[in-house]
Length: 432
Image (cartoon, rainbow, N blue to C red):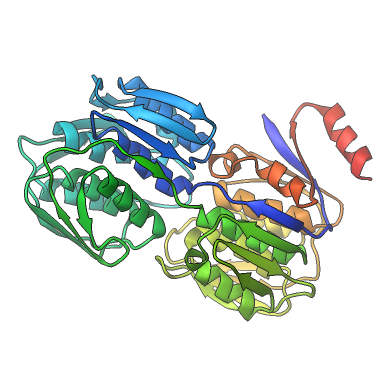
């Protein structure tokens, strides 16, 4: 088991390049098996969630050729299993995209109930509602979701909540269903648009992605294509907030600035400088920042996946801030770890009341989930002394080479084995 060790109080300075969007890549990889042609996908993030999904795709008979860490060829012509019940697939939430993909292509699919971060209830009722509206019979038993249909027909589907997962899953199935499907109250996130663009590159007919009404005309079959995944807005946002927290000056490259507008607006509101370029943003913060109030909302609102990182930043800012979490009910589990480092945060219901402090002190903390782990790293970069972040497997689900990218910006941070006391002591001697 590995952990991060960090010596804080050093501003991040320099340039960092953002990888492909994990959440888009998961939907796109599932969609890639829906044709019998070969699909080439580039700008793929090399993180554990992606690697688990590729293993699952290979295990059902698809041919997976890893060109390099960030590119893959997939051919789904020899798929021979409609049932996916492997230990690794239980580890990622997005395993349910294989249900929509296989159901669309073969009219039958069975997938283990998904896992992922324990940040609250993420029911799949909207997925099931969509599949049933398209003509499938859906059963959950023995820890598996099974969907079957004699025929899939387009339908008018209103989502009770703007679920990203349900929107993508219904798109996957609907693009090979007969007739037209309309999804109302659809999610508008950039990765929904990216999956739709990928499907259209394969020959699907999807219009309206990025709005709250998506129209899909079913086609007979999909074809091969080459596609490059969009940059990861959450990785970019994490580095933006890390730059601000450490009073640094960082240029974040390979981004789509429009996707970052909610984060940019809040940074500017509390006193940071954000400069936008065509495919980069620069974040500069020289002084202690101010306070603000934040409520997480579906895109284009402030993303729930940036809430822990923003809370870590506001815990160091001047004044009282309130962060309200409207998406997941268990997303404040990391607060106790920040308090161990000196933060003054009180959680009441779905809100955190934050009284900013002037600094943190290093401590041994444990990441309860992916984005909370990133927040604890940011806290460690600011803290006086040494911080150890445990359970970093969560962080590696969504950030590629996190410690290396931080090191490139000047951070005193390393990944070491929990039991390698020599490596820990060597790091401490090196950074003083």
